[in-house]
Picture 1 (spheres, helix red, strand yellow):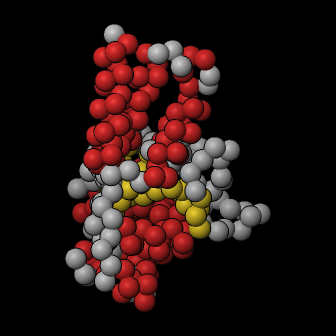
Picture 2 (cartoon, rainbow, N blue to C red; picture 1 turned 180 degrees about the vertical axis):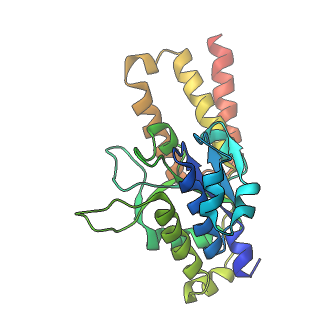
Picture 3 (cartoon, rainbow, N blue to C red; picture 1 turned 180 degrees about the horizontal axis):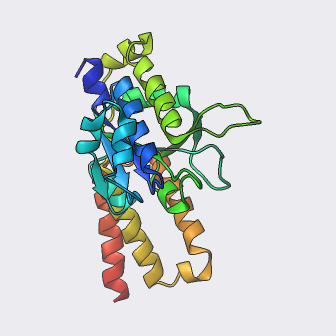
Length: 246
Protein backbone atom coordinates (compact mmCIF):
# COMPACT_ATOMS: atom_id res chain seq x y z
CA UNK A 1 0.00 0.00 0.00
CA UNK A 2 1.68 3.20 -1.12
CA UNK A 3 -0.73 5.68 -2.73
CA UNK A 4 -2.49 8.44 -0.80
CA UNK A 5 -5.94 7.08 -1.65
CA UNK A 6 -5.06 3.63 -0.32
CA UNK A 7 -3.97 5.10 3.01
CA UNK A 8 -7.14 7.16 3.32
CA UNK A 9 -9.30 4.13 2.52
CA UNK A 10 -8.13 2.66 5.83
CA UNK A 11 -10.04 5.36 7.73
CA UNK A 12 -13.74 5.54 8.54
CA UNK A 13 -15.51 8.60 9.93
CA UNK A 14 -18.01 7.62 12.63
CA UNK A 15 -20.75 10.09 13.61
CA UNK A 16 -22.64 9.23 16.81
CA UNK A 17 -26.23 10.27 17.49
CA UNK A 18 -26.22 13.05 14.87
CA UNK A 19 -29.30 15.19 15.46
CA UNK A 20 -29.40 17.31 12.28
CA UNK A 21 -29.44 15.61 8.85
CA UNK A 22 -27.81 18.65 7.25
CA UNK A 23 -24.68 17.98 9.30
CA UNK A 24 -24.46 14.50 7.81
CA UNK A 25 -24.61 15.90 4.29
CA UNK A 26 -22.04 18.59 5.05
CA UNK A 27 -19.77 15.97 6.60
CA UNK A 28 -19.98 13.86 3.44
CA UNK A 29 -18.93 16.88 1.40
CA UNK A 30 -16.06 17.66 3.79
CA UNK A 31 -14.86 14.06 3.59
CA UNK A 32 -14.94 13.89 -0.20
CA UNK A 33 -12.94 17.09 -0.64
CA UNK A 34 -10.19 15.53 1.49
CA UNK A 35 -10.28 12.13 -0.23
CA UNK A 36 -12.11 10.15 2.48
CA UNK A 37 -15.06 7.95 1.55
CA UNK A 38 -16.06 5.68 4.46
CA UNK A 39 -18.88 7.08 6.60
CA UNK A 40 -20.60 5.27 9.48
CA UNK A 41 -23.65 6.67 11.29
CA UNK A 42 -24.60 5.50 14.77
CA UNK A 43 -28.29 6.06 15.49
CA UNK A 44 -28.76 9.23 13.41
CA UNK A 45 -31.98 11.07 14.25
CA UNK A 46 -32.96 11.48 10.58
CA UNK A 47 -31.35 9.57 7.73
CA UNK A 48 -31.80 9.27 4.77
CA UNK A 49 -33.00 12.84 4.38
CA UNK A 50 -33.38 15.32 1.50
CA UNK A 51 -31.56 18.03 3.44
CA UNK A 52 -28.57 15.74 3.87
CA UNK A 53 -28.52 15.17 0.11
CA UNK A 54 -28.77 18.89 -0.61
CA UNK A 55 -25.86 19.82 1.66
CA UNK A 56 -23.72 16.94 0.38
CA UNK A 57 -23.44 18.99 -2.83
CA UNK A 58 -21.85 16.38 -5.07
CA UNK A 59 -20.92 13.89 -2.34
CA UNK A 60 -24.20 11.97 -2.47
CA UNK A 61 -22.23 8.81 -3.34
CA UNK A 62 -20.79 8.84 0.19
CA UNK A 63 -24.28 9.13 1.66
CA UNK A 64 -25.57 6.27 -0.51
CA UNK A 65 -22.95 3.86 0.74
CA UNK A 66 -22.89 5.14 4.34
CA UNK A 67 -23.29 2.39 6.91
CA UNK A 68 -26.05 2.96 9.50
CA UNK A 69 -25.75 0.98 12.76
CA UNK A 70 -27.51 0.92 16.11
CA UNK A 71 -24.49 0.93 18.44
CA UNK A 72 -20.91 2.14 18.67
CA UNK A 73 -19.81 -1.50 19.00
CA UNK A 74 -21.31 -2.31 15.59
CA UNK A 75 -19.68 0.76 14.08
CA UNK A 76 -16.27 -0.54 15.13
CA UNK A 77 -16.69 -4.17 14.06
CA UNK A 78 -13.82 -4.25 11.55
CA UNK A 79 -11.66 -1.57 13.16
CA UNK A 80 -8.25 -2.05 14.81
CA UNK A 81 -7.71 1.41 16.26
CA UNK A 82 -10.11 4.11 17.49
CA UNK A 83 -9.60 7.83 18.12
CA UNK A 84 -12.37 10.06 19.44
CA UNK A 85 -12.38 13.85 19.04
CA UNK A 86 -13.47 15.91 22.02
CA UNK A 87 -12.77 19.55 22.87
CA UNK A 88 -12.40 19.01 26.60
CA UNK A 89 -10.17 16.59 28.44
CA UNK A 90 -12.12 14.42 30.86
CA UNK A 91 -11.12 13.63 34.45
CA UNK A 92 -10.31 9.97 33.77
CA UNK A 93 -9.36 9.58 30.17
CA UNK A 94 -7.06 8.39 27.42
CA UNK A 95 -4.09 10.43 26.15
CA UNK A 96 -5.40 13.64 24.55
CA UNK A 97 -3.46 14.73 21.43
CA UNK A 98 -3.45 17.86 19.29
CA UNK A 99 -4.95 17.01 15.90
CA UNK A 100 -1.63 17.43 14.07
CA UNK A 101 0.23 15.15 16.46
CA UNK A 102 -2.64 12.65 16.30
CA UNK A 103 -2.57 12.72 12.48
CA UNK A 104 1.12 11.81 12.48
CA UNK A 105 0.43 8.78 14.67
CA UNK A 106 -2.64 7.73 12.71
CA UNK A 107 -0.99 7.76 9.31
CA UNK A 108 1.70 5.43 10.62
CA UNK A 109 -0.86 3.07 12.12
CA UNK A 110 -2.94 3.13 8.91
CA UNK A 111 -0.30 1.20 6.98
CA UNK A 112 -1.58 -2.11 8.38
CA UNK A 113 -4.74 -1.23 10.32
CA UNK A 114 -8.30 0.01 9.93
CA UNK A 115 -8.91 3.21 11.90
CA UNK A 116 -12.13 4.81 13.15
CA UNK A 117 -12.30 8.56 13.81
CA UNK A 118 -15.28 9.11 16.11
CA UNK A 119 -17.29 12.31 16.58
CA UNK A 120 -20.11 12.78 19.07
CA UNK A 121 -23.50 14.44 19.03
CA UNK A 122 -23.50 18.12 17.97
CA UNK A 123 -24.75 19.35 21.35
CA UNK A 124 -23.13 17.06 23.91
CA UNK A 125 -20.14 15.54 22.13
CA UNK A 126 -18.99 12.00 22.88
CA UNK A 127 -20.72 10.17 25.71
CA UNK A 128 -18.79 8.18 28.33
CA UNK A 129 -19.94 4.96 26.69
CA UNK A 130 -18.58 6.10 23.33
CA UNK A 131 -15.33 7.38 24.83
CA UNK A 132 -14.50 4.07 26.48
CA UNK A 133 -14.00 2.43 23.08
CA UNK A 134 -11.26 4.87 22.04
CA UNK A 135 -7.56 4.12 22.39
CA UNK A 136 -6.70 7.82 22.23
CA UNK A 137 -8.49 11.16 22.03
CA UNK A 138 -7.80 14.18 19.85
CA UNK A 139 -8.65 17.88 19.95
CA UNK A 140 -8.58 20.83 17.56
CA UNK A 141 -6.69 23.87 18.85
CA UNK A 142 -9.43 26.45 18.40
CA UNK A 143 -9.86 29.90 19.93
CA UNK A 144 -10.32 29.23 23.68
CA UNK A 145 -12.77 32.15 23.89
CA UNK A 146 -14.94 30.64 21.14
CA UNK A 147 -14.04 27.04 20.43
CA UNK A 148 -17.39 25.91 19.02
CA UNK A 149 -16.96 24.12 15.68
CA UNK A 150 -19.67 22.84 13.39
CA UNK A 151 -19.51 19.04 13.08
CA UNK A 152 -18.59 19.11 9.39
CA UNK A 153 -15.91 21.75 10.03
CA UNK A 154 -14.34 19.55 12.69
CA UNK A 155 -14.39 16.54 10.37
CA UNK A 156 -12.79 18.53 7.56
CA UNK A 157 -9.97 19.85 9.75
CA UNK A 158 -9.15 16.34 11.00
CA UNK A 159 -9.30 14.85 7.50
CA UNK A 160 -7.11 17.66 6.13
CA UNK A 161 -4.42 17.10 8.76
CA UNK A 162 -4.32 13.37 7.98
CA UNK A 163 -4.24 14.04 4.24
CA UNK A 164 -1.29 16.38 4.64
CA UNK A 165 0.64 13.69 6.51
CA UNK A 166 0.51 11.40 3.47
CA UNK A 167 2.78 13.81 1.59
CA UNK A 168 5.16 14.67 4.44
CA UNK A 169 8.75 13.39 4.86
CA UNK A 170 7.52 11.53 7.96
CA UNK A 171 5.20 9.51 5.75
CA UNK A 172 8.10 8.46 3.53
CA UNK A 173 9.97 7.17 6.59
CA UNK A 174 6.87 5.29 7.74
CA UNK A 175 6.59 3.39 4.48
CA UNK A 176 10.03 1.88 5.04
CA UNK A 177 9.12 0.53 8.47
CA UNK A 178 7.20 -2.59 9.45
CA UNK A 179 4.15 -1.30 11.33
CA UNK A 180 2.33 -3.03 14.17
CA UNK A 181 -0.99 -4.72 13.40
CA UNK A 182 -3.46 -3.92 16.16
CA UNK A 183 -6.01 -6.38 17.51
CA UNK A 184 -9.51 -5.83 16.02
CA UNK A 185 -11.83 -3.82 18.25
CA UNK A 186 -14.29 -6.71 18.47
CA UNK A 187 -11.66 -8.93 20.11
CA UNK A 188 -10.51 -6.17 22.46
CA UNK A 189 -14.06 -5.35 23.51
CA UNK A 190 -14.82 -9.05 24.01
CA UNK A 191 -12.00 -9.24 26.54
CA UNK A 192 -13.25 -6.18 28.45
CA UNK A 193 -16.79 -7.58 28.55
CA UNK A 194 -15.46 -10.94 29.75
CA UNK A 195 -13.41 -9.25 32.49
CA UNK A 196 -16.41 -7.20 33.61
CA UNK A 197 -18.55 -10.35 33.70
CA UNK A 198 -16.06 -12.11 35.98
CA UNK A 199 -15.66 -9.12 38.29
CA UNK A 200 -19.44 -9.00 38.64
CA UNK A 201 -19.55 -12.74 39.38
CA UNK A 202 -17.14 -12.43 42.29
CA UNK A 203 -18.93 -9.32 43.57
CA UNK A 204 -15.93 -7.04 43.16
CA UNK A 205 -17.65 -4.37 41.10
CA UNK A 206 -20.46 -4.04 43.64
CA UNK A 207 -18.01 -2.76 46.24
CA UNK A 208 -16.80 0.22 44.20
CA UNK A 209 -17.88 2.45 41.32
CA UNK A 210 -18.08 -0.19 38.60
CA UNK A 211 -18.16 2.13 35.59
CA UNK A 212 -15.15 4.11 36.80
CA UNK A 213 -13.16 0.95 37.55
CA UNK A 214 -13.83 -0.55 34.12
CA UNK A 215 -12.73 2.71 32.50
CA UNK A 216 -9.46 2.54 34.46
CA UNK A 217 -8.94 -1.08 33.43
CA UNK A 218 -9.54 -0.22 29.76
CA UNK A 219 -6.96 2.56 30.00
CA UNK A 220 -4.50 0.19 31.66
CA UNK A 221 -4.76 -2.56 29.04
CA UNK A 222 -4.93 -0.11 26.11
CA UNK A 223 -1.53 1.25 27.12
CA UNK A 224 -0.01 -2.20 26.66
CA UNK A 225 -1.35 -2.58 23.08
CA UNK A 226 -2.11 -6.26 23.62
CA UNK A 227 -1.57 -8.77 20.84
CA UNK A 228 -4.24 -11.33 19.92
CA UNK A 229 -2.36 -14.21 21.55
CA UNK A 230 -2.04 -12.22 24.78
CA UNK A 231 -5.76 -11.51 24.83
CA UNK A 232 -6.47 -15.21 24.25
CA UNK A 233 -4.25 -16.10 27.23
CA UNK A 234 -6.02 -13.58 29.48
CA UNK A 235 -9.46 -14.78 28.39
CA UNK A 236 -8.36 -18.37 29.04
CA UNK A 237 -7.39 -17.36 32.59
CA UNK A 238 -10.76 -15.64 33.10
CA UNK A 239 -12.59 -18.74 31.86
CA UNK A 240 -10.69 -21.03 34.25
CA UNK A 241 -11.45 -18.72 37.17
CA UNK A 242 -15.14 -18.81 36.26
CA UNK A 243 -15.08 -22.60 36.18
CA UNK A 244 -13.52 -22.71 39.66
CA UNK A 245 -15.99 -20.31 41.26
CA UNK A 246 -18.93 -22.27 39.84
